Length: 134
Image (cartoon, rainbow, N blue to C red; front, top):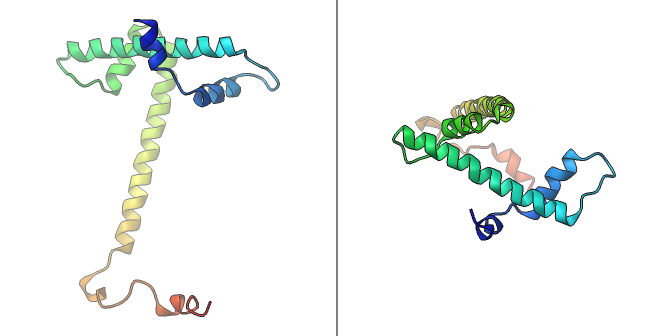
């Protein structure tokens, strides 16, 4: 992997600063060189991880890398501790997303109108009458 490739695919500095700031104790500082080094290390890690994930996808005769491939890449790359944390976070995120979809569908069902209601406005006229007086 060339330095040019790593430099092209660096994280935005604002994102890196936010991550670093959240990890360091209050009042701690980090040099510009250390930030640059971290940015390059992140790019190298991502390259390594995606290579591991792509190899797993290829072994399964797939061209698309999915979450399973990334998780296997973490395990085979020796990052089990990251795998466990990410797996828990991913499952939590998936459950949260599913509940949001369920709530949205439920709200949509409550707001759907029948054919009898087509001639009736969706809101009572009294709600909009106060707006025209302004």
